[in-house]
Length: 191
Image 1 (cartoon, rainbow, N blue to C red):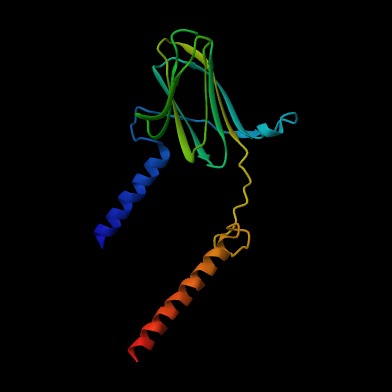
Image 2: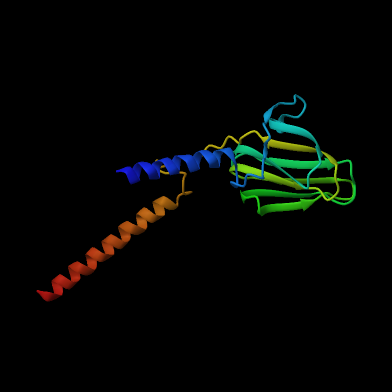
């Protein structure tokens, strides 16, 4: 019994640490959460969603950020605009851990980089600056969640298969009649 309690204690402690530090438990990495606020411009209804604009003066080699709770039904957009044009700033978008990038990029000759994607859950942003201090604006936008009507898989609908459900039913009835006819003729021959 005491081993079960010890195991549960370790499990709960690990869960607490994992929530405190997304993507790793490295004490040297202190990511900044980018809190998204509502964004609803009147002249651009398709731009509705949530946004964060952060101005940064980076004085360390690598800076870490993360966004929580993105829906797969929402488009996501991230861009960096830097005052420094050369050398390029490296940006990694991380899902599993800070060392494995799901997407990467480098700011171009104008100091600009962007990416559009869809994902679920949390995402980490790792920014690596070659020259310091490095000044840039980090914009993250998550669009309004798409309102998609998905029909239930458990409700029969005439239009669900475009008429193919009736064909399957007719085919099954024909196969059953054929099997019964074969059984009838085999039994008739035996008599």
